[in-house]
Length: 411
Image 1 (cartoon, rainbow, N blue to C red):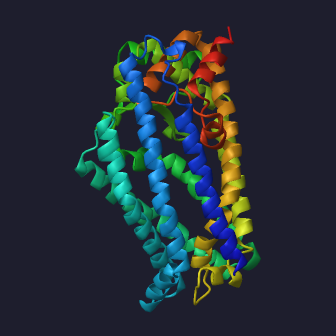
Image 2 (spheres, helix red, strand yellow):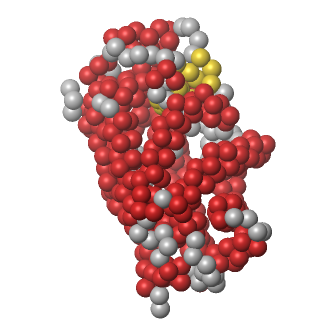
Image 3 (cartoon, rainbow, N blue to C red):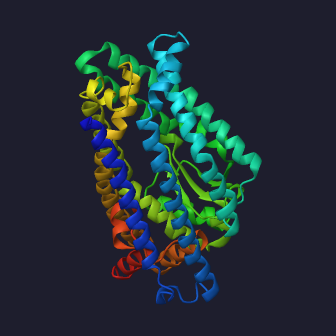
């Protein structure tokens, strides 16, 4: 049997078994006893409902992965990729348009397979637990806008990557890397003013106590405040959130309208200070550079396998092509991507502690930050007692109880 095929199937099966194990551990780690820190935040019924949400979403995730694994394996073994390639080639275009069609067909099939799960998650589970506000029209429009963006932005980038690997020889990976770096940086500038408004309405925060408090805090911290906005997050969900977006004069502080509705001014300032801590500590810059290094490594490694005949034989392909090689390399890269994700999540969790410490030091609002975190957990139905393995593998933020302990230790 083809060694590449054995490796890829092993990766798929081991990945599934690992996810299954984490899910089972997550279910077992659910504690019906409300943590003392959250007494008075949840009532017993509300906490039980939150745990049921974790239970339902975890089981649904197991079901989804249990369906996707045999579909993926069957598609590989039955030569599904070759069928798509033959069809794309039959249209008579040159290599780059053919590659875009081939890639688009794969994305379309993946979307159609995932669609029933997405619909049930959004309109079944999220509705059941009172988290969803997305209408069918909004859901459909989001899909159409996402497709248009993928075609308008992703299509040209992918076409250039194909061209570089076809024409640039040993330097192709470097050109591809530089292309992605440039596009990523440009998108950071234009996304807040061009792309994000396609999906949500951003309104400048009006005058009042909150804006005055934010402006005063930003001045004390010598933070170049470019704009404070509220976003209509309630259009899709009851969840709470706040974030920074953009660079330079396009930098924005964004609060979900749901967050502004449910938190007091000092709690919002504490959360803002946490987000500003990421900026002051250069966490965003560090993670961006880390991502660029990872991308460069990926393209360099990809260049070694892009036209590997053994890899194409594993997928029963009649023809060797750059565009199919990009797709197949993704299967080989999965274990590395998992290890990189574990590393970057670990760094991200450390950054969260540092941002919390900055927020407390710069505002003195430790208890307000804790209360804000508690309200976020309650509104978002967060799992208060995740299993350590789940945290290690996939959490970009520390569990809330650990964050609270760390904040209290700062005094």
